[in-house]
Image 1 (cartoon, one colour):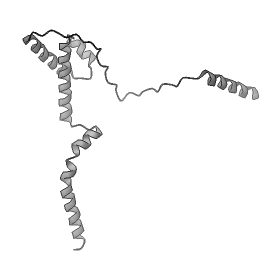
Image 2 (cartoon, one colour):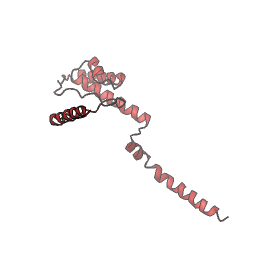
Image 3 (cartoon, rainbow, N blue to C red):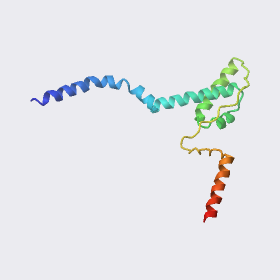
Image 4 (cartoon, helix red, strand yellow):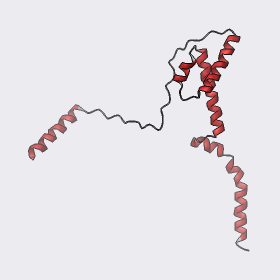
Length: 139
C-alpha cells in the first residue's frame, strides 16, 4: 500500500501537467521547423496564387512565371494568374511593369556547397617553394 501513494501522486501530476505541456506543441514545432502537412499545403497554395497574381499584374506570361518560380506548384500559379486576369479585366486595370528583377530561386539544401579556397599569398607561396627546394637539395 505504501508504494501506491507515490505512484498515484506521480500519475496525477503527469495527468494535470499534460494539458499545459501540450499547449506549447505549436510553438515547439514552429521553433523546430516542423509544419503540419495541411498547413504547409495551404501556405504553398496561397503563395502560388500570390505569385501568379503578381505575374499577371506585372504583365508576365504564365510560362515565364512557371520557369521563374519552379518550386511553386503550377496549378496554384495558374489559379492566381487567372484570378488576377479576371480582376484586371473587370476593373480595366493596366499592367504594372516590374522595376526589380525576380527573386532568385532558393538553393536546394541537399546540394553540397563548395567552400571557396582562401587566396594564396604570394610571399607565403615563395617561402613554400624555397622550403621545398631546400628539402630537395638536402636529399
